[in-house]
Length: 145
Image (cartoon, rainbow, N blue to C red; front, side):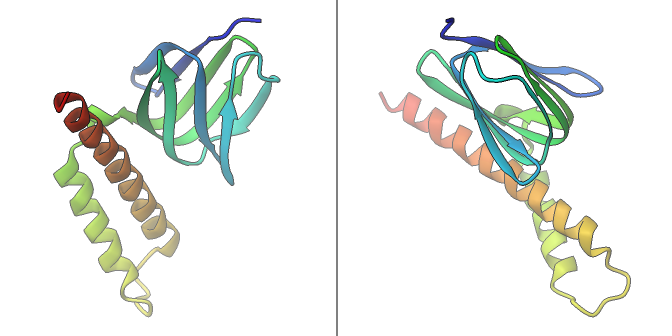
């Protein structure tokens, strides 16, 4: 059995990741799935979260929001509504989105607030900031050697 598989993360507009990986953790509706080479085939609906993957002993991350994932024994294809690599995240924009969502959710009796949309915006912003923070910490650690 092979000890790697191909991971592809694509959105409607671009290819975000195409790597040969040894492991991946993928956000699906209701949680995460871990994928190793030779995984049983499956099709699942994506959630909102951090998609992480291992390439040669290093761990990389990207955001993955909505869509579907198809797992085959030698390949994983993530068809995400939206995705971005950690280094592509605009941190000030994500922070502003987080603050906007928090303000909307802080007014529980406002009939003009779409709660589901505000909660999803909050979750997306949190994931973007989490992935960006990990990338920042990794680059600081790499630079300190």
